[in-house]
Length: 403
Image (cartoon, rainbow, N blue to C red):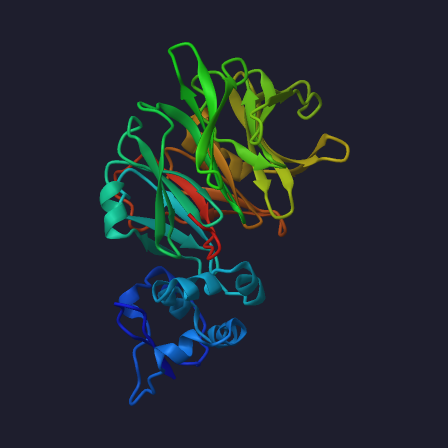
């Protein structure tokens, strides 16, 4: 046991007793809940600590519980660089839960989280400074442990990128003001993140704008009105370096390369039975296995009678039918949508394809490995009479996600 003290910082006592981090300790962790000293600790001279070789410090840190490591990030820049280094994160695995995050118009101070491991609801509180900033805004996108918020209305001058695990945030300024945007997507990677959005430079023209955190700047690319019509409200899905979008009238799959902003359009004849009508089509992507899926509604006269899932086979460039939603579940889902399929959304979360509706508080998911369908129970903290504005995000905490 010993003390660590940084310049102008309160000492933090460290013990080498290993503990298991649970979902509860992660969600409700705060600097005030960091370990306290036991009786008669032995103080370590800061000069001795600062002169220890990195490999010895790394070995000491490997014995610490997760929430203590997070607390140590504020002790010194040297400790922070060691803890968040790729070598340390790759050598020491942390058992962290993953969640489905629910956003609705009354959830700007905290967000309900559903934990599949415990099959229960938790809460993700926002820091006071960020909750004040986001009080009149909304959560726009989530990717690999990072959350992207709008700051005030869409005419504001910046976004806020936030990592709830490390409690770090950064403001990303728009390239010009005012900056009306739509279809914003955050795409995070081990080396940083990119932000994709469409912006209207005039009443008749829209452009692709992409922000690169590595370069710290925006790039603007050509007109997109002929590719994605105005009023299209489905976010893109990242797959093989591009964002993919599925259109249903007429059915098209379009993609934009995030490196050069070039668009590709492809029709997928034969994906659906020729005698049936596509009522809606949504894409999801398994980023770990690099697999692209499509969820599609099949019917006639604009009424969905069946919902199917297809998997894209890259080697043959064909879509293979993988699953059909059971009829009784399909009837329930289509009834809550009121045949308004523009409000149907899909996302990927840890081997699960999740399907939900903007005006329904529950979410339906298909477990790809088990090939089973389930409903996530309604969040108990939701207002009884709230009937629209429900948006869901996959939230997988990450220490290495830098803002």
